[in-house]
Image (cartoon, helix red, strand yellow):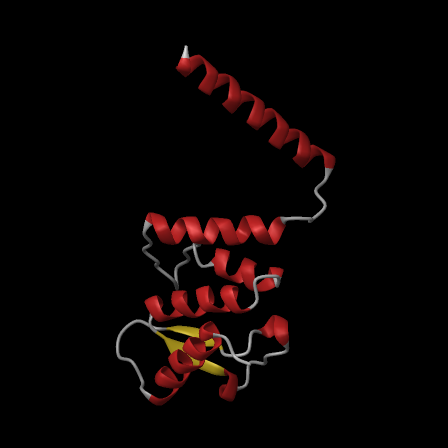
Length: 132
C-alpha cells in the first residue's frame, strides 16, 4: 500500500519528467543512489529548486529511518557555485531536524563529545546570567 507521500512524490517526478521546466533546475535521482538508484537517464529528472526541496522532504517522510535520505535533505541547506539556494527559517528548521535525526546513534570521537559538552555548559551559563 502506498502512502500519500509516495503518491505525491510519484506525481511530482512524473510531472517534471513529462514537462521540461525553463529556468533554473537541479538534477534529482528518482530512486536515490543510497537505495540502489543509478546515474542513468531513466533515473534522473530536472526539477526547479522548490520542487527539488519538496521531493527530498517527501523522501524523508516516506523513509524516515533512512539516515542517508535525511543527510541528503539536510545537505540541501548548503550552497555552492552551482546551487544558490534561498530558504525560509521553516525550511532551515526542517533540514536541521533531518540532520539531527540522521546523526542519532552515530558514534562520535571523544574530542567532539567534549567540545559539545563545553559548548552546552557555556550556553547554559550565559542564559542563566541573562535571567538574573
